[in-house]
Amino acid sequence: MTWWQALILGTLQGLTEFLPVSSSGHLALSQMAFVWLGTPFSQPGVAFDAILHVATSVAIVWSERRQLSRWFGCGDGPRLLLLLTVGTLATAAVAFPLRGVAKAAFENVTVVAVCLLITAVLVLSTRWLGRGHTTEATTSWRQAVAIGLVQGLAVFPGISRSGATIAAGLGAGLDRKWVARFSFLLSVPAIAGVTLVELITEREALVAAGDSFWLYAALGGFAAAATGLIAIRLVIRLVNSQRFHYFAWYCAALGILVLVAGWVVAP
Image (cartoon, rainbow, N blue to C red; front, side, top):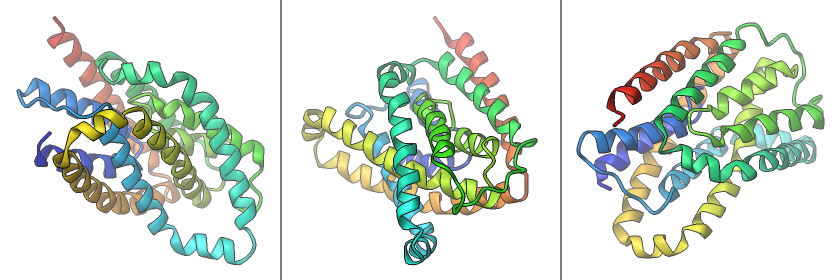
């Protein structure tokens, strides 16, 4: 890994974690592109990707710090924690059994392309969804579970976590102003759990990686957090203005392009 690869991947992660275009899909495609262009990329397992996800979680907490303070200050904190807990448990119930298959998919360009096309359908559906009026004060645990189950599918590269959860939330009747924020907050415990598992699983490789890996991880993490803050604000505006579905065309075009490219370069 080089410093410019870390910077590119961190910037991509920060932008695509919240925009409905799949951060994992873009990371997988970028790492494939490095190899295709003759600049191989290597890292301990998927530990670098996990660290970038942690950086975007920091961006979420920082961006929502005033809302979090208000919720906990007015007594809604325990209710919010309950919703995030049941939603996270639902995510784990789906994501962990699929974890091995999903990791293998990071090296399969066809799977990434198909998942991007699935994301396109999910994001496009938000054009007709969003007439709900459920807010943070009235969201039920059943709605949180439904959104959490859908979030679990984002373990596959190409399935946008934000796109899938926002579509699921709107379908479940959540208000547009609340659905994006709940989607972001629900990602924090899920990312923390996945990162912990990855760091434990790859602990020997991380020890052998040396100081350079951690330097590049810090550089990529800073880029991910900075660009993530920009993307969070953009997504909230797009969901509120009912223009979120525009990203469906980008996902569809990229999915088709990747599918064709995969066939062309396949041996």
